[in-house]
Amino acid sequence: MRGRLLLLTAATTALVLTALLVPLTLLTRTHAADRATAEATARAQWVAHALGPALATAAERETAEQTVESVNTPGLPATSLILGDGSRIGPPVAKGTPPVTDAIRLARTGRAFTYEPSTGGRQVLVPVQGAEGGTAVVQVTLTEGQLYAGMMTSWLVLAGIGVGLVLIGLLLADRLGARLVGATRRLARTADRLAAGDLTARATPEGPPELRLVAGELNRLAARIDELLAAERENAADLAHRLRTPVAALRLDAETLRDTEEAHRIAADVAALERSVDDVIRKARRPLRDTPHADLASVARERAAFWLPLAEDQGRTTETQTPEERIPVPVPEDELAAALDALIGNVLDHTPQGTAFRITVRVTAQGTAELTVADEGPGLPATYAAERGTSGGGSTGLGLDIARRTAEDAGGTFATADAAPGTRVTLTFPRAPQPPPAGTRSAPHAPTG
Image 1: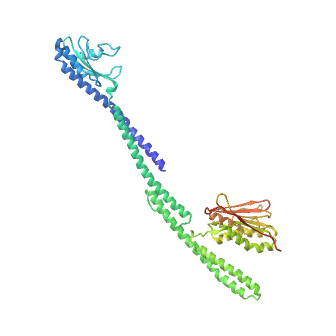
Image 2: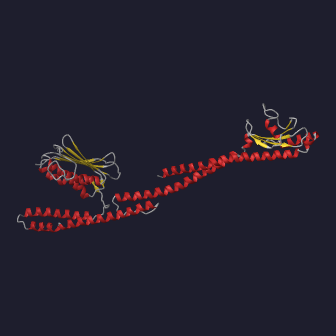
Image 3: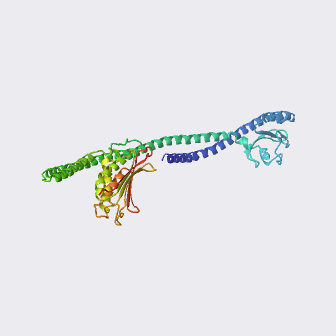
């Protein structure tokens, strides 16, 4: 925008200056010629006035020669005196030019005039009446250079003025463009902060009226979004809070069971449900930008250990490969654990018992963190579609979608692929740059029964 504004200003200024300076240059040319002609006419008239009495007698010829010689100084127009008998006092005529031309004959009739000969330049002719032997004529010849002397200086001055005006226009346009671009960029940065979840970001109305109007509307939009999100979070928290009553009733029912082992098992499940409800309430009331970082490697090892007993009951071989160092990713630990649980749960629920699977965490060459869950099962069903609530295996279809949303909400990616054999699901997450992993940790587990 700034460059285009400068280009537009330069083009507009150049056009305006061209429309003004071209007539001015022609005017200076005409003015220079008129000034030189006026000076030559004055010189011719002075010479004619000075030589008029002297030419009345032939004895004064020497005086006439001295007068003509005195006005023919270097750099000034050539001045000549053509006597009535055709003889010339002063510089000789150009080769090929007759001593007495038609213009001189016309001047002998008593007319003083100026004309432009075919050889270029300009001549001023003034008759001298009363000369012995006929009318004499004073001839002042201006060359092209003398006629337009000083014109180049005037043109350079005009060109300098034009360049100066263009530069001033560009400077003003650059300042204006900087102000417009700066205000626009600050407005865009505010919009980026809002898009990133910082609902406290507000734009400062500045710049032209249109940008100030956009800034005001953006602030109104941010405030409205903040209000709506706050209401949605409170509604979610209220709904989760309502679950406390039936959960409490379940806990009481569990305590009345006669089978002590069964009562403890159900009570543990109810306690886990209560913790889940509390997590929902805390998450609903957590600010959008309050996103703690979780250690992807640690979560992968923890969830692999959690699911290991069930995998062993199903006769599955599991393997977990994670780096020794921390791999922080911008995902809350509970959400990351839920995404990994969904992937492992899909393997346990939708592949034949005894099917092995592997969990791998690594840092890619691009610096991103990658989580892969690969199994050796029959692969994804032909009817599988990567849409929320759609499943080809008879489930709710939410497991893979939970994992996908977890990765994409953090700025990562989600991908599935049929391996040979089995299926591979890969999640990538952005992470802060850190030294490459020093090694990997491999924890193979064989079935025990």
